[in-house]
Length: 310
Image (cartoon, rainbow, N blue to C red; front, side, top):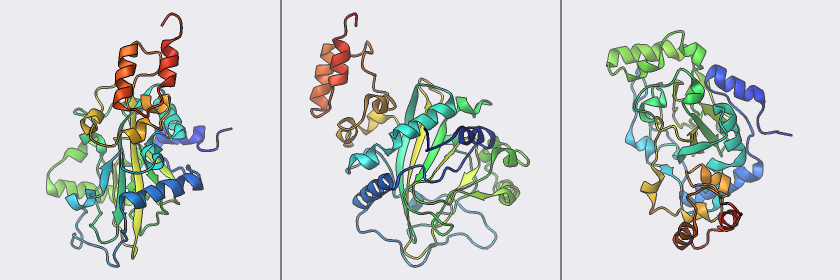
């Protein structure tokens, strides 16, 4: 029996554009991932005072300092953090939401925030601008799904993402308005959206899946000594070239053995690795792949190759 999410969660994602699911990950999974965060960001603790850039009555902004600790996987740590973005239940939710059996993970990053490192307060915006070169589809399942996963308790003082449900945003603006570069008009848009703002604050282990056409924003870290550990995992239907972010092979110098040596064939398929039995796999390609990743257990691929008729 499924206990991680329900059909109602999937329906709410379709209806509202986002849904908060508390305690999605087990305490043991949270502890393992949080431990890896500590390895990746050692000896870090938030400062006593928050950084604030904006003046009275102004809206938040984007600053490079907000993304100084926004890193793509794989990282030099255990499989817990490197594979959490392809957790089987996370993959299952993405497949259910997108209505597809074959999905790809096209973005996965860790995001550690610490009080005093930056002013994390952002304006409301939609993510489609850097996930596609066109615009969101009218069918949300033909877009993609972004899932923010929290691995520390997130209160209002720990920089939770705030969002506007799709029906509420539709009352005042459309997703395309996020492209409006006029400062005065953008300020007016922010004021229109503000009354509909909701929070994703939740206990460690919770997730918030949302669409690329959903208005949302980062909020500031104000808790003294505060830290927030999160993972962003983005899924699309396999083969949908209209959606993109990472080109995984471009990060070939990263420690990919931390993924290949521990992932299942199903998890690797989310990175675009062909499944066992695919015509790509021949004796030659299996031998070459084994040379690239000597500790990768390729027995499922070898066994599929040995099946008569393949």
